[in-house]
Length: 96
Image 1 (cartoon, rainbow, N blue to C red):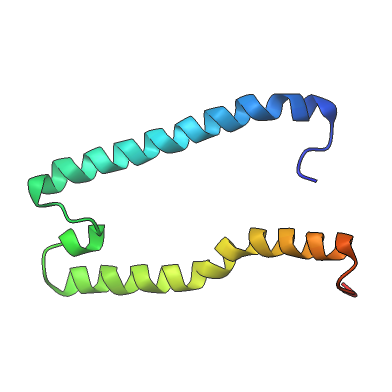
Image 2 (image 1 turned 60 degrees about the vertical axis):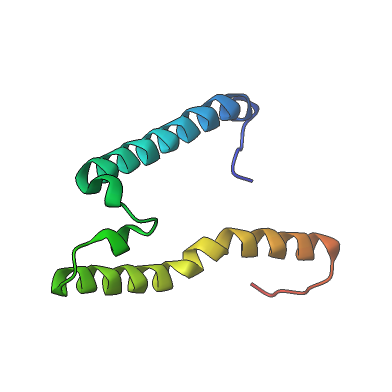
């Protein structure tokens, strides 16, 4: 369990709300900065808005590699929840 004490459980909703607002603020700041840098010609995919050339291609390739290698990190929480549900239900027998 991520929250161990009742005091922490009581603080969690307020902390969660603050963190979510910070994330929204960062997204808004990033979007505004990109819009200011590229103007009305901004495309949905940020890498598509880069000027053509070797640098843009390098950034696009690096972004693709980063997405490919971070996918296991993104799927990990869902796998943990699924395994916990399976173990509680007694449908699996894991020896780890």
